[in-house]
Image (tube, rainbow, N blue to C red; front, side):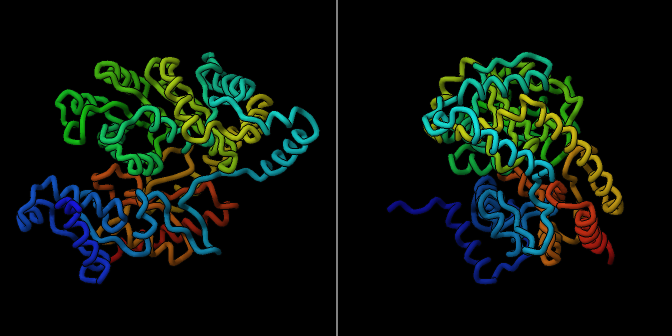
Length: 459
């Protein structure tokens, strides 16, 4: 049996030291250059060691501070690409996940199920569905997206997927190869990270500006060949240009056009994840309208409708549809026809548009509450989003804040959950407020956040 790679030997040695208590929570690991000199390693090898510890949820890299042993209270939850934040107590408040569901949606669902049961061809729901979905479901989705963008969307370019995460999975299966790097924002979606880790797809971090992914930095990365250190030429770019999660920024039109120019210059595919885009009423045009020949857009219904619906619409360039259909066939064959038909009722009759208007108003209302409750914390965010970023002041560390809030029954997300692999993260937490069932509950939970953060500032 071949010996494990040298960097893995160091990973296991450090992991064992953490497990037996020789390296306790909060211990700062040596700077990478110092560790490399001490053990006769290349600095790049130490970078892999620390990145693997972070991937396992055993360490956390913080901008300007170094790499630290993780707190056990949040380390276990961070083990799988830091994808699942630690839950609050059963009697606690969830400010980690962000699923705004309106009270009236339950009755709308009940009525829709009654109507489906009493009429229509139910036998069609028991048969195999085409890989891209029934034509009626694709037409309903295309009409909705055409209204949203004020530009006609062809149903033939649309695929019905089993939720936004499944759509991203299909795209990785169709577009990405193991060892072939994909560019992402320095802070990116944990679900994309999790998929890439399972498929051995390297993610290359691109710096962000106030408007999101920096096209100049991406161009420099491709021109200098620096991405080859990650395994080869960058093939695709995954980005969230309309209401970035967690930064809350919106990429201006000029920056989008610059990104498209870079993509065409270096023959890059663009993946536009618009999970929160519905909250922006006057958003610039999606990348798909600027570069239709190379852009894939994922429009999930989890946020505008409900997470349990598990339906998303993937719009793809015609030339790439055969690979997307093949990926659908290899994954789940097709989205569940019952859920797809249920979802198709609501775009057509204006129900989803009404929900979107309601959720925009709710997001603005809760942003106002959050800004008031967190006024002393220096939080940042988009005025129409369901989340804000709260910086964690030194000397307190992010893990300490997450653990302290967890003890009070409040779940939040450490920002390193969004950090691209190997990238240090700002010392901050994401506070989401789509899930609390009342403003009063939200205010109480945010009061705990403010108390812990301001307490960290006191001597």
